[in-house]
Length: 327
Ligand SMILES: [Zn+2]
Image 1 (cartoon, rainbow, N blue to C red):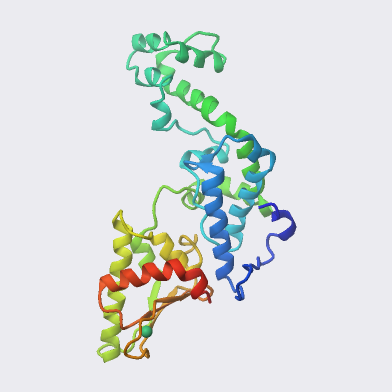
Image 2 (image 1 turned 180 degrees about the vertical axis):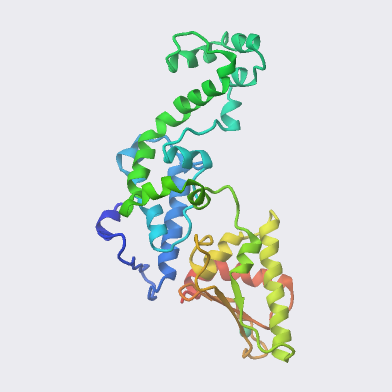
């Protein structure tokens, strides 16, 4: 993070990535992997529930500016989608007021106000000291607003309580994202960009399968039969991990194993992910699925005999992946 400024003097120069102690040429896979790693760092260290952590040191170190910069780079360099913000955070980032979250409405000082269903209950709610303090905080001088303005009032309280302490971080994100004038474009196309910046959805199994392009031998051939079977095991495997809770890896891990990107980029993978098949193993072969993150290639050995074996092998390959099979 500290080196952001030094490395990318021009964000449109292709970012070349080299990992220490590894021999690999970057033709895109490492770049996506690097950006994915940065996004994961931002997600876990700088954000909490998709909103900036309130931590002065992070603001002082300009960490959010670098975070914004990385998110912008993801767009300019066809990297992974930076879908790490909450919907509310994305709105505030675009200078719009956000609706209070359920969690906020249920906090002790806000709940009596939020749940009031008539003028009288609404007035009563402010008899609670903490709720009364909210009035003072947003300059109501101790006078409760009208019941009919309840939602407007809650929005203001939400902004004051939750977002104001995060505004410096938000401003840094805005600055960072605004590489080559990207920020105004985002603001003008909110709905379009929202899907790439917010994390509300997990990776879509069907959309992921659409990204795959299996290279089958001619239909009806012996080879085809084997390939078709092993491809089905693979699809079952990713379907399982996408819909069941207790799996070693997520579909996002599989995506990163094959492409270096933890999610599907804004325009889908171009070209699509080639799935090829290894037929020429010797009888006792125990090899694993391999990937080449630079060329978007997944190679499946046809001697995988069951969904269980596919699961075990993929799980193992993903753990070793970045070191064994990087292309
Ligand atoms: Zn093999």
